[in-house]
Amino acid sequence: MIDKNGGFTLVEFLVALVILMVGMLGLLQSVNIAMDKNLETVFRNEAISVADTLMITKRAKTFDALSTTVASPAWTSTPISVRGVLKNYSTQVIVTQPTDRSKQIVVNVAWKKKGVRSTHSISSFVSTF
Image (tube, rainbow, N blue to C red):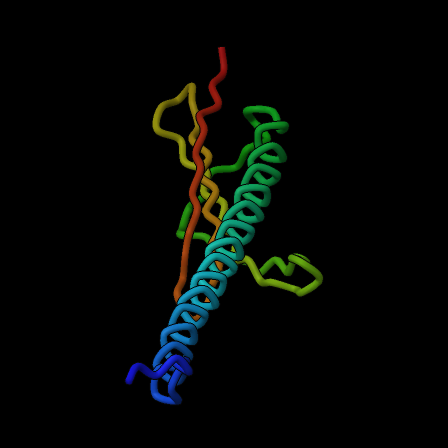
């Protein structure tokens, strides 16, 4: 005799539930990774903005007004609001004079995320005629 009252057993249901939960946990983990990478990009973009602002300020000065750096300059802390939270960026501006008629400006910006230090550096030359 064939049983026509077939259906899911409790074991089949639990196995299906475990498979569904593993899939959902994987999906949630991918969302966490995406949010973390997005935050890294936001921090990097803000560091680029800080470096560009400092570089524009230095390049706006005349050639003679740019004083060259004698020793390694100290890092200065710059708190900036990122997504409503104050984030500290460390900045350093180095001006060197490779030749008599040119000066090099290097702007370094550093920040920490989860204990890992990241840096962004830009440089530019200014010359006189």
